[in-house]
Image 1 (cartoon, rainbow, N blue to C red):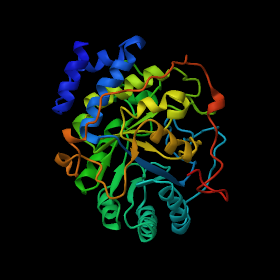
Image 2: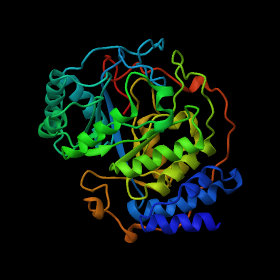
Image 3: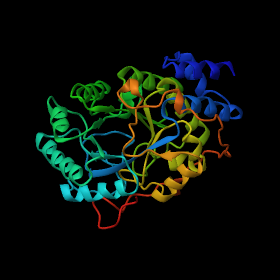
Image 4: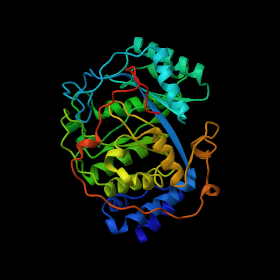
Length: 379
């Protein structure tokens, strides 16, 4: 297929595809799906070989958020039956993080609900970062605390944070349909605050919220322009009690096409398969490893994920390997030790069957273990 050959050539050169080419990936047929995955897989292996980075979430403060993000079970007015608790103490958060590191996670992501941190909150998180680093000196710590004010990113950097996450989520033109309590521009500004402070920027999207193909391409092109080091791709988890609980419009095939499009547009960044993979990719998750080079291990913020052992088995069975703590994730030209062409092994791609989309509410389980509970975490 001429389109895919062109996209592979551009990906290997780190050249931006055209909008028309990116849109065309999203409209390829199911019959061509394996060819799409194989083509994007060549680009993934060029820059990251067969390494898979594991990340682990610790929800520092759950629920009771004043923002009205329609996709979020922690939002203002949410009727979702999620865990709700205030700030974990540094030793509690460090214990939760240690479970993820023991399970193979290279990065720990510290997340707190809310519009953005107060200076006191930054102090709390700084102490938590110190506690985690004291126990696991080599672990990467990423903070995700909402909108940042002047100077807060610098304070997190000084405390030992390696990265900051703040997703764009959807296109600028449709952002107001999803959230009204802050703006798309607010999110962009926070990512730039993080970059300005020397933190590795992490910013991605949520697919499956009823957006168009053009919206998906818009947000991914915006991310390319913003140039974060990592791009998490979330697939909406339609949690009962949220405004988007009825949005079951993703198939495994569409999810894979979205991931392939992201890889072609952002060829040399850490593309992370994030929330919703178990819900929407289901048995086709292993195919996604040919497109992404990073996943979350264990549970998410308010919903349960696949068992940690199952993740490790999936990675091994698909012919990939977990990225070790001593390996630099990003390619050398992005400030890492990277791969370049020497990383690229064979061009083989596994196949998998397709499933039709339906409202599989049985696949969404509210988290009742790990941070904020007395039960062991899923790692």
